[in-house]
Image 1 (cartoon, helix red, strand yellow):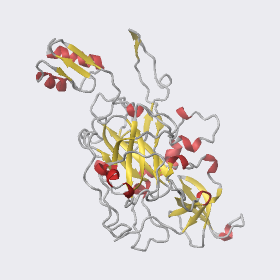
Image 2 (spheres, helix red, strand yellow; image 1 turned 45 degrees about the vertical axis):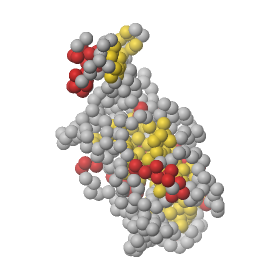
Image 3 (cartoon, helix red, strand yellow; image 1 turned 30 degrees about the vertical axis):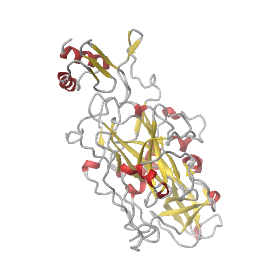
Image 4 (cartoon, helix red, strand yellow; image 1 turned 45 degrees about the horizontal axis):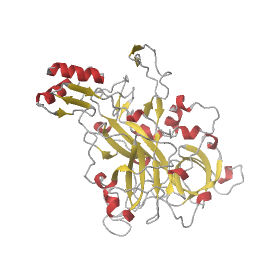
Length: 460
């Protein structure tokens, strides 16, 4: 079998029509008489002529979905078909801050192959069926990220070996964010972002004080960090952006990059910390992915479902970090390799939102003031102003602990009155997180109260 025949056979076995021949050819020219492997699953033995290409799913693991954070808001609605639901309203209203990343869309998954085929044109060859005419009707899906947040030296419910930094100084880390992923090399970039990174954060009642860090909203994002809109989504990703520029090899993605460099490299360049000094008046730690990322982490047995064959990715949060702001959404962006043949099932943007969760603490959350009802206009007999506050993007009515006044647009700290513990012995995890639902919208919540607190003060 000559080189061209071998390449053709490998491509046929893998179902490829283009894009790999040059790579195979160059590799095969260098082979003499030994066993060689190329892409994972490919096998060549030049003397015997054996050629195999295993149908592995490295480019499909992100389509293997888990519990949908979008679903949790609607779980109080009986008879809802969550696997075929249109979550656009939740994305537009509860996750409205995503609009600061133009054209960003969530992952779309295939929940029901038979229902998501435009036509069923089958060719039965040795009991293997080939179907074509795929339909662009995937379901929006944001995998629920897991987290634990703890006070210094308190134990975790789901410990792991930890990142390199955690292994060295475990008590310098106050928790982690975790999400399930498949093998590396599929995603060109994996990054983390927070709601306040995008929407900004004007500290309530402290806007004039230089001692408090003000986060501006994203308004001047460089083009290279903007998601690329797939104006006509295809089953394979577009290799060029809207301006015709090649996507492959740029490694650009908004957020704190956890993995980059064709999906294998943990960045070693520190991210500048918000504060010069930490609470101990020492130089604040600058987050560094090579020290803070753990691959692969221990299983989280109570996540709610088995994530196999995926494994857990953990990003460990250093005590000097100024994230998360309690109550904000923390999301994971992934940018798949653009080089075909990479089946990604009609994704609408690159990168796309892959995972996330609202991250609160045991006692605290926060929200955005949407409207203010003066005490004199209240009809419930309450004392002080009544505030409509969007907590987890859900509008609820709550009072303040004192007579400090807040304005529309302020992010306010909120005490969770019914969940306070004076001395928690363990971490607060995603399992204890209460997600607001449709039935909560527009109701008055006596278990929430606005307090005159803020996160985080600048330390020089």
